[in-house]
Length: 442
Image 1 (cartoon, rainbow, N blue to C red):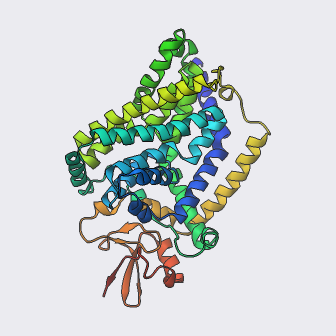
Image 2 (cartoon, rainbow, N blue to C red; image 1 turned 90 degrees about the vertical axis):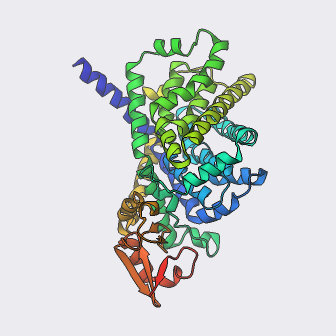
Image 3 (cartoon, rainbow, N blue to C red; image 1 turned 135 degrees about the horizontal axis):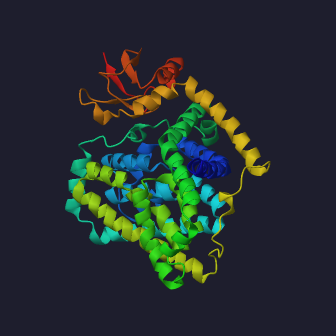
């Protein structure tokens, strides 16, 4: 019975934490989906071609407006690099995608408070600056050329490759007309559930691990490990060990925030929490993806410069907040022990569950499931013919294997799903002639 009770206690903590952040997560995914609907990935690649201050600012801003999935961010960064973005800007974009996004800030606000949100965004920008400087000082052109050669091989390294091809952005017409059109409703639903599909495992695993650690590991152990009896040493130790714990956790994206909550509750320093959150892009599975995308040497280089930037940014931000008196003095996190009640959280969760149901209806009735299946088989995996793009969603399609196609004005158009074909057949003029239209002549 003791083992069963221990497991149930861990699961209870996990469920309590999920309920507290359900609406912030949904809101963050919704805002991200809306932005992706009106910002084209091809426009992003064109804006990131030069490694200058303007390119750096655009990489940070556009990254913050993209999907927060770490695996998707890595795939999109390679796609941007292959489409003309500089390597430095592509990596800065990738780090901004996971550290400067809405949902991360919202979840941090609910769990840990505004101080951590402020430190996360200030530290995220600082980390990006440090990375940019390190790249300028140490990145050799021959390494970039070798990485480019490896990237052009188009090796499929994860099930999230389709994020790089997916582009349902609407760029024609006034902003509000685009955002509130039926086509935008479809695109938002697809981006929303594409992000959930990409992140559900990491988020779920993060909450389960956090629940287990909170229930089973006594605070005295954490306090000894984080040197809480040596305040000066702990200020240095936290930012150094935080990224290492993150690397070994295998959890990335928003999924590492619950773990950060447990670490803060256990006594890690303020800067240690920030560096831990930053380190989702150097977990072991992503380092392996770097190896496949850019080669072994570049993957080790990215590990080294990323770790230095994360640890240094965490230490500097932690120190700055300490000097300003903004670091919370109480490490106890009450949410780990508080169950759901009839408060604003419950009402907002119910409201967003209703909204998610509406988006799910649109998603399932417009070929969303088929779109997700096709995401696992990007164009790089189809060497048999020249790939074309689905004119509706922008997904790259192998014409020799495409099951869905339509003929319009003597041209054959290929689609990733029946939903995209149906949308095209209803109004071909919306999609024909744009940069995204993929077709073969008869």
